[in-house]
Image (tube, rainbow, N blue to C red; front, side, top):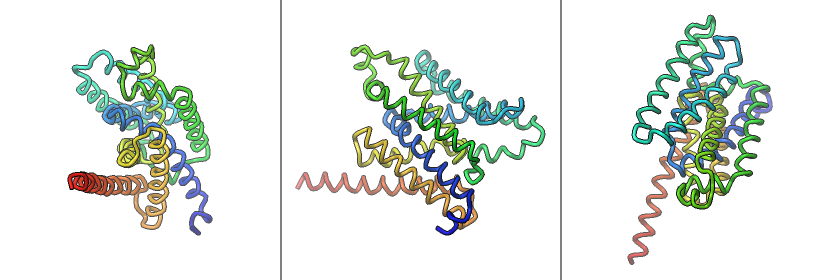
Length: 276
């Protein structure tokens, strides 16, 4: 606790972790319910291409990440809607090409090649006040859009055909939903990096889904779990001098495995009690 009060960078890191947890709790619940983790993975790994291009042309890397994430979300959404038979292969190709383009741009940018590891695995301890402001703005946009279109997103997530029958423009809200996932990916890049984004996006929501079956409550529980994992991960990594992003994901993964075993044990016990 004394370390938090003494070091400003720890306070900034904790605040960034809390902000990222809100976005991943809200959108991660949708991703888990709709089972599109692989699509979110395609978006996240395409982001490196935008970051590398932004560095090469002298812009802030997070601006390139935001633009690349939105473009990847729209392209992946279009592939999903138009090329269903080949969507896995096409998304996999985008995944690989996005990372390759980013690595090439970063390699050709003088003085930035060594920063590749921080983009891949995150460095939340170096987050700036400007980045925290950007994260807060992205959180506000995500929450505002979800509140405004909660019923439409709910319908698209659970039953697209029923939503079409009710007159909901499913394709529009599906693409909008993917764009919000893209914004969440950009939020998380600064915390755990591109490689580990999907874990923090899905694991807290998956744990919440073991016990909660109402989407709104699932979002709240996932956000709280994300806050616990990021806060504990930051403090543990500081005390043990370990990479913060990896520690956060190890905690989240361990929590998921433990929760999966407990929930399975509970279901088996419930089934046994109902038989007796």
